[in-house]
Length: 304
Ligand SMILES: Cc1cc2nc3c(=O)[nH]c(=O)nc-3n(C[C@H](O)[C@H](O)[C@H](O)COP(=O)(O)OP(=O)(O)OC[C@H]3O[C@@H](n4cnc5c(N)ncnc54)[C@H](O)[C@@H]3O)c2cc1C
Image (cartoon, rainbow, N blue to C red; front, side):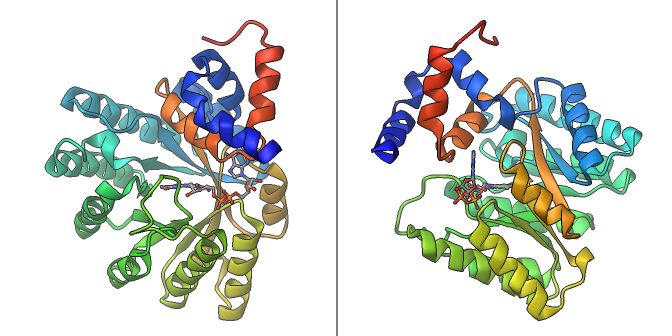
């Protein structure tokens, strides 16, 4: 019954007033400003975690917006370097123009990588929905020709990912492995939960066995356990992989991984363009209905 109600809330999420979405989703976002993100990073660093900062915004349709995002990334890179915090950056390719023109995304991506390289900082390009899979891999592979510290993401739910990994492994590209968050058709994506977990484990295994660096991005205990078993079986050194988790999700699992000596990085999004990211997070939150209801009933002065 509760699960049914949760699904109903997910379906009607577009009708929920933005101040309520904002309130419930605030744990997933560091805040509106770079200073908010740096504050969050300081707290995480005190826990022993690393971070990757994301300037919120995606599916941009105007060139001017891509320039503004690029400039914000340059500011972020400089601020991280000046702070000496253990952080790097994650970039959504459509935020820097992939949906407008791949050449524009390459130009903006190169500017971001140039600034990051000047500080010895790593840049990861997130993976978005399937119309952009091929173009995103092309973007990362093109940037990898010019920059050492560039990484990609593969989504375990996509049937193509295991073979896409061959192209990335051939160039020794650092790969974040995640389940994938977008709604994809069954013709190209696994749908069964257990199958996705097995696909996730297969990607981790292939990347690590091939000598690549794996960023294991999950809060699913089954995925974490399978990855730990692979790390143990292959005797992978601690500096050849890291776990990654989203801000606001499962601090208990986060602490247990840190306490047992694994490297762990938290995804720290910030910016005013919070809505699309936040609603994706709410949709995967198992207790979304209760939290939205509590917020409606007990809504004090809502945030803007
Ligand atoms: C660092 C990082 C980067 C990512 N980058 C990408 C990317 O580039 N492209 C992409 O498509 N996807 C990305 N994702 C999202 C990912 O694909 C999954 O959608 C997300 O991580 C949930 O999958 P899961 O493995 O945690 O398993 P799930 O089965 O979804 O979750 C396992 C458990 O974690 C908890 N949980 C998970 N999500 C939430 C939440 N939002 N709120 C509260 N509890 C939650 C619940 O207890 C749940 O039962 C990223 C995830 C992480 C951690």
